[in-house]
Image (cartoon, rainbow, N blue to C red; front, side, top):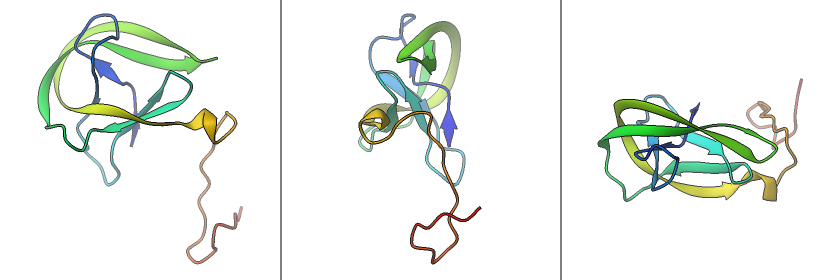
Amino acid sequence: MFGAGPWFKSTDCTESPFIKDDQGVFPSVAINVPGNTVYVRDPNGPLQTVTVGSVLLGNVNNHGTCAQTSFSAQMYPAVPLIDLDILFTAPFTVTKCRPGSKGKVFH
């Protein structure tokens, strides 16, 4: 569900972003700069073989690190969905709620 990225064809994390092919039950997403932006699969973008040149790693104090890499993989074009910093305060956590709990958290 959550993975590294987004990934780029360029060697300097510019150009259009990509995310890896969905392999699980939930769609793949990447969370990175600016802020804590959630990148999702572009619904109009086709699955394609991408020769990757760089990836955004980590997000510490709103600074991602661009790392060069080189490999090919099946990926989708990615689009930014929302910056989580607009809605929430980091660090973020996900809590499981019981079915029928109407959002009440149980530990």
